[in-house]
Length: 147
Length: 84
Image (cartoon, rainbow over all chains, first blue to last red; front, side, top):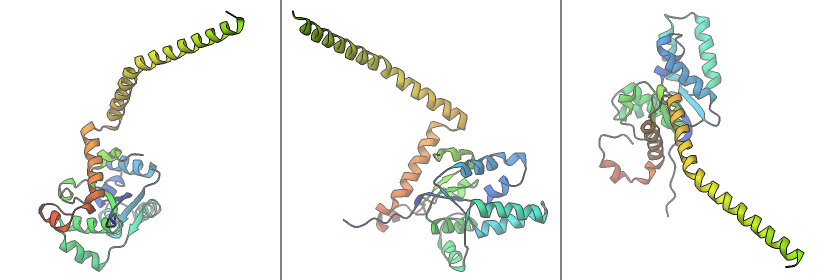
């Protein structure tokens, strides 16, 4: 019998940029994102991932809304809570070859796959639903992941 | 009947009564346990804001993602809208 190589790890969870931006915005409209991250932080035995691309996007979005110190604190917390996946030139090529709907989402998917993440948490469910290699979960449904 | 025989008979009677009552307890609680399990599940679903179907779908999705390596490249080609 041929040996089956497992491509994904059920304990690796990738969080998309839009969830991070909402969660740390301090805006009550994005309470679901914030609750989602708190739940993820409380799970034992799972490894949480984000990408360097997400960190750059987060800084860029917050630049006009928060002070530099506030942004620094957010990034330090993310460094503490998550493993940050490097975004490289090879990943750009891989993302361009993917056939998902949105190129930015393809990049995130490629990065998630790099760390064998079985679960991707995103608000952008529509574009990700084509990606069968991982289970896509909205922040409001994060409790489908067992604690 | 000797004293010893009486004791043995009494002990047997006690054991039989005990096992009968345990069995009847098991039978009467069997349905009740299932009922309470369902009620607890319902309560947890309400508290987490999830629907049973969402929970099942998520688990099915994770199971599928974990077993995609069983498909050959040829089989994957049959699903052109999906990214594996």
